[in-house]
Image 1 (cartoon, rainbow, N blue to C red):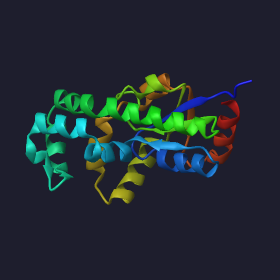
Image 2 (cartoon, rainbow, N blue to C red):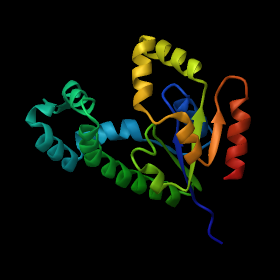
Image 3 (tube, helix red, strand yellow):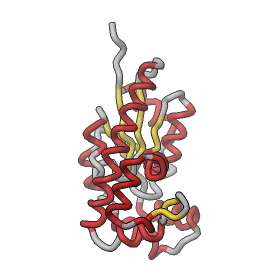
Length: 197
């Protein structure tokens, strides 16, 4: 009998603890694909992305082979339409790379693989996973975590939070919710989730 294969999507707002959750899964032997860092890599290495971004923003979007992050960010954050244009270039390639990576993990004997993405639903990555788990933490905890982590102001954190899909919407779209409020033990929730999968 063929072993059950499950592809898990991990999402949550900024400061919710997605990275900590992902590292906890890795410690349990589950492979997790970090879509954010992989997207950054692909934006440097994938010829289709490089040529499409140059077509969209001009040659100056790359300086000595490195991404001109300031130029890209100012373009992306200037309008939702601009963000969509960039996302339509990057996200399909990330999806393809993840699916190839997942197949490789399954062929190596893993039964569960995961993809971590803050914008899982916005990017359409939920279409390529079997189940979605949302990491949730109260807003005040998230704000204080990000302020400490990024050495930034509350206003700056709130600006970033407002750009993301609201937590209540993410919860409705998710199959599982992990509470990362420091009260409910995280390890117990993770073990329960894995056994349910």
